[in-house]
Image 1 (cartoon, rainbow, N blue to C red):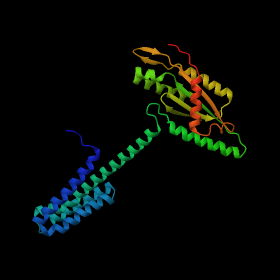
Image 2: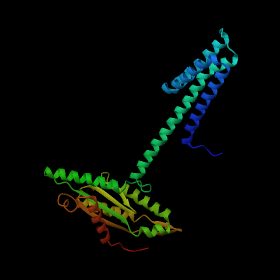
Image 3: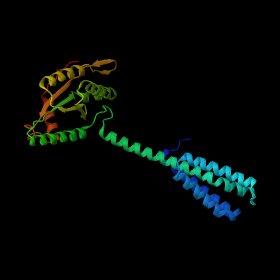
Image 4: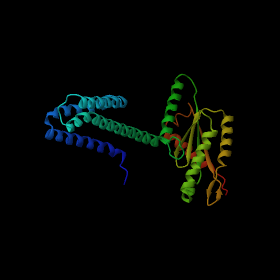
Length: 288
């Protein structure tokens, strides 16, 4: 039997509740009409109690009513048939239980919808393979930094940022060979960059096999050292297909954005065009 969807259980629970109310009230009205009003009150109290009180208190209230009602019906002077006694004693606990069940299912649905929204938000901002923020996030980050640079200019401060763009050359050819291995390589590149770049740098995955690193102004020596280390570590990554290892090639492009560059690079689109032109001029050495 196919398992019912989580989003159908609450509808089924409500259907059972409505059906129980209709059947019980119809039975009482036709058989024990004198208890009809009392039964309605007990149904209402059971549902309200389950909604207002925590589940633990509802359980204790239902047990107390069941035990106390049973004691009165058994040992008290109550001139009603046994079936009517059972109905009166059990109505409150039964509808407390139904109310708790529905409240629990509503909570599950709310959690599921919240989780779904969170997942959708996460997917829209984070690449599922590299676990890096996407192009839109890079644009937002860059524009905030540009605003910071402009504000600093008004205070006669010279603030600059370094931009490093890294592209896995010929990545589409490798993707055609093996999409799974292509994803593994992207993940390895992402993990490598996270490990070797400085903590104050922000790494983004802006499109297929292209990574953008935005960072505060680095010294020329540190920039060179980071580039050497990055090239060396990326060269260790191999594309494996049918037990054969293929070396990879990477293109690098660098920009510095500061007061002087704001006239030419005042938007993310201009920045991306400039670094991509830099990638095109970075000649990679072909080897197998």
